[in-house]
Length: 426
Image 1 (cartoon, one colour):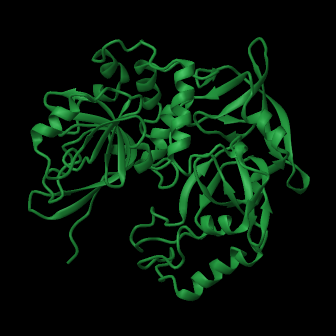
Image 2 (cartoon, helix red, strand yellow):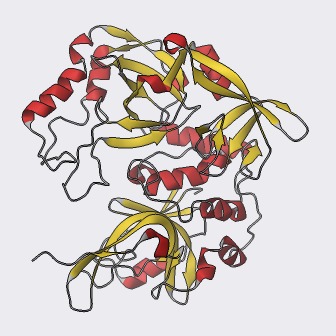
C-alpha cells in the first residue's frame, strides 16, 4: 500500500509556519526589520549596482544583454542552444493523460523545431513581449510530466516572462507559431503571438528609458495585462492624479506598436528603481506572501528574482545560478557539523542572504529562539509522521517557515540540507 500523503488546503495554511504552525507575527516584515541593524542604510550606490549587474552578465551564460547581440548569429550556434536539452531526455516523461511519451512523439517535437532550416548565418530580430508568455523547452504548449502523479511539474516549462521584456527572435518553428528566443535570463520557445517585432533602436529606447515607472507588486495590471515585479515602463508624463506610460502591443503582421496608457499612482508603482535597503527588501518580499507556487512561474528562484528586480538588481533565473552571485559565505553538506552550520549562519543577513539546497532556494530572514527562518516559494517538503511513515507535506505558496521542516526524514531538515550560503551584495 502506498504511504499516506498529508495535504494542507491552501486556505488553511497561515502565512508563517513555525514548528507548531503558530505565531502569525512572523509573517509581518516589521518583526524582522526591528531585529535588523541599520535597516534604512542604503546598501548599493548606483555605480556599485551597475558593477554587480555587469559581473552577473559576465559570469552567467544565460544572463544576457539581449540588445547587445550581433545582427547575425551562426546557425550552428542557435542549433546548439536549441539542442542543449536533449530530446528524448534521460528517463521517462508522461502526458497529462498518464500516457508515457513515446519516441515518435519526440520525433514530432523535433520536426516542429524546424532544425533543417538552420543553415549559414541567421538574422537576429528584436522585439518586446506584449503579453505574459511561457518560456518552453519545445514549440508546444502540451506539458510533459516527470511523473503522472506530479501534474505541477512540466519538464518543458522553463520560465515565465511578461509585457515589456526585450527578446531576440533567433528561429521559428515549422508551423510558424513559436519562436526560439533569447530573453534576458533564458533561451527557449515562446508563442509568436506574444511578441511585437521592431528595430533594435526602437526596442532599446523602450527597454532603457531615461524616466520610468517600476512595478513592485506581483498582482499589477497595466493596460489590461498582467505585468511582473521589477518591470520598467517608460514614463511619458507625470500628471495630477495619473501617470502616462508607454506600453507594448502586437500590431498587424506581428509588428510592435507602442501605445500610451494612463494609470493611477499607487504604492504598487515606483518612479525609478527603489533605493536598496533591508527594510525595503523585507517589505518587497512580503508582497508575495500567500501567492500560489507555480513551477516555471512563481517558483523558488523566480520569487528571489522578483524580490530584487525592483531595486535594479537583475539576478539570474535559476537557483544554482543565483547562489553564485555575490559573496560565498559557506559551502556545506549533509555531513557538515551543526557547529559549522551555525557559524556560517552567524554571517547571514536578513534580506540579502540566500540559502540554497538541491533544487530549492530561500531568502534568509533571521534567527529566533534557536531556529532559522526564511521566506520562500515552496511546493512541498518530505517528513515522517508519528507512525514512522513517509509523507509529503504540500504547501504550494510563498511562506515564512522555520527550517526545521522535514527533520525526521532521512535526508534531514531544510536547514540540514543547505549546501550553499551566499550574500548577494558581497
